[in-house]
Length: 453
Image (cartoon, rainbow, N blue to C red; front, side, top):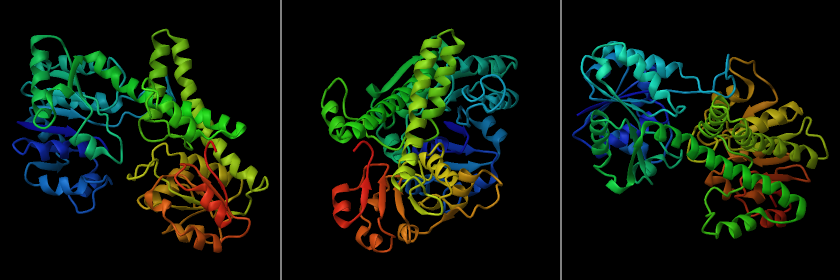
């Protein structure tokens, strides 16, 4: 069997690496038109940081895992084609700011239709709106050979930072296809790939539309839980309750459960906001404005939480951060990844710079240039209000306040006594992830604040 994956990003690269690792008899080729990205996948410095990924790639690469820019050649040779291209939120035209931009999906479908000389199994791996498979099928139907291709939906449910563990031992693998003899055969072919290491009872098969919608709904539900606990964190701060204690108490209810009840400065990442907005747009499109407004409120709460955090820093520092040095520890949207998409740190840094603060950012995995581009904009001139440090200690020297925005483990064990000694007094610390011992920090002499405390 030969598998081709179009798209060498955060989903395509790790997923294909795991398939190649677990199924050495399957040839897996990951293709992308971005030559720099493919070169990085073929180097000792991968373009994505994910615990465990390096070892798996090095084991399989050159054996049965290959990275290439020959998109058409890989498509022609493949039995199964995974489509794992970007589906960003539209920034123009109808649905701007909410609907998914499917131009890359359509482009891939047209390329497959052009190249395919034998029936293929095409697998939607990208996060897409429900009924997108219809678009792919209509494009394929225009070409005699491609018309016989089967389209499946196989959404990813990876959490960045634990992606390799999630792939090795998934809660479930979801595969949707048409309920026809040809569709069922295609589903079983893909099932056989995952069944090499995933228990059969964890592989769920559905129709196409249920699978496509399930991905959006899963992310929307997780985002809603985070926005809900963050809304309660504001109430806790106003009343003297402790949000961690509240979360622990309600999480013991088996109907609720403890997961995704961690209050924070706000959720980020490539999927949550994009998928909730997409779900809202789809609801409106299908004549369900009340449903649409409900999901919009999840995003509204998340945006408010980010701005609330920055506003609290300003208010606490005597209503002005102008010309004050603020150390921002962490820029990735979560620990154990170098992904900054929709990171809460972007919003907080922009708000502080707008207040004329001197922001000094440190993140152990995010490149300095990426931080500058995210905060200031692509090709924007340098701004003296934003600098990048190479260590947490460097960022904190002379800082009036510290803001922890990513829950990197190293921030839990910093020598805060030594850091405090190098800061003007009173020294402030704002823990946007609730990972530090606030009582211990206050005992050292910090004025320390958490979320919902």
